[in-house]
Image (tube, rainbow, N blue to C red; front, side):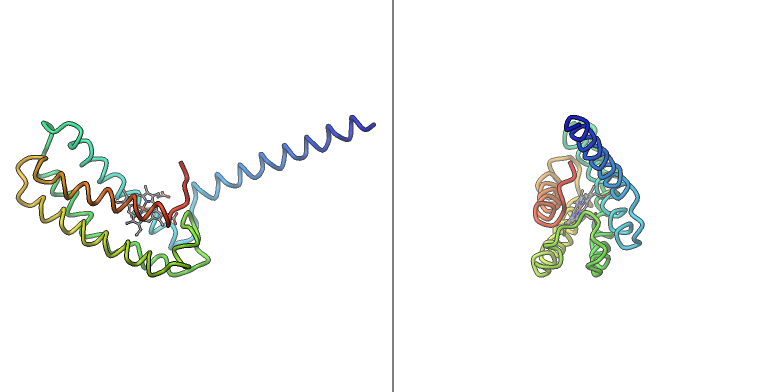
Length: 156
Ligand code: HEC
């Protein structure tokens, strides 16, 4: 009798865990809130742009000035866009509480991001090799990372 009871408890605990995992996945992959979706879409495209430029960093002989310029310009032009989509506290997404509890810190990170992407864009305009954009690219990468450390939930 006791044995059966234990088994059932374990089964239901297991069931609940699976359920939670399934719900968690759903919440992650389908952002229904328009603000969360808009800022995640921006962030995803930042990831793509950084990937294109990062590949050239890894293989300097593949440097393509026109393509690099395009990606850098995109980042600089979009750099002010995501932040207005963080106004609603209920739209949490994968943002940490710090976005709202440390709003000044978050704003500082967002402003720094706009500064370093403008600098990368400026450097890209006249770049003839990867070396011309390397330091500015490094600053942009550091800015993504620095903001994510405090303000983005670790999803990896
Ligand atoms: C000022 C802060 C800040 C900066 C700067 C920033 N991010 Fe983010 N990023 C966030 C936050 C907060 C989230 C979580 C958003 C959410 O889920 O609501 C996020 C989420 C993401 C995601 C996941 C998007 C998704 O589909 O859920 C990617 C990818 C990403 N960022 C890439 C980047 C890259 C690349 C850069 C730099 C070029 C960057 N971010 C700069 C704050 C920032």
